[in-house]
Image (cartoon, rainbow, N blue to C red):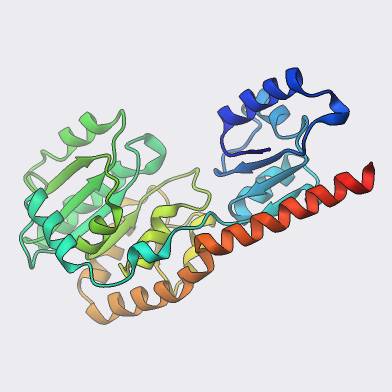
Length: 292
């Protein structure tokens, strides 16, 4: 059995206790996708050790958190979550134009975007602050926030400020992320914590959209040491604005980052993820047979 979320671990463990005696239970693999510490929740710590044969961490940073909690290095592997790269291949200009038209951004205007739930640790507040300063010198720039969450009304209020009014677009949750990426000139990941191996970063890289991201370990692990993205400290709106200004004012820099990011993203294909996951299954089954 392979659990992919905290709720799945809880339900699967309870079901396993009822359905299988200890000696007959199937091997259990669990995937950990976020870098939050387990120490704040004793029950969560138990989930990752009780009747769990192996844990897949989606980034090195997530693995180190698990090791710090006492898990054996032998029981933890790193496998980045993969994306379907074919969705981001080929010409998508018409999809990008359609998305811009839908949200009311004219062709030729600079469009900065971010995709993610509107929750505190995603850092949208700092992106809005940075955009407010950026827009003073970029009269044709717009920002689109794709995602839904409990802070939407707060951010909509923030977006009514003088420099942001009419230039920030909230779309809610969307599934057509390739079209969104095709419309963007710059993608921003402003998260302040909790990111493991964010799919949206890989989707931006696959789309050849230059990336500005907060310097979280999992994100740097994906995009590379400075040649696949511009990194800024988490929660620093001033540095985020500076990075955006650097990209908007340098077309060659945007092209270089986008090209290098596209080269790197092939390491994070769905096919590679499946291959590595199958290897984990084989190791777990082999250990179970050896112990029989």
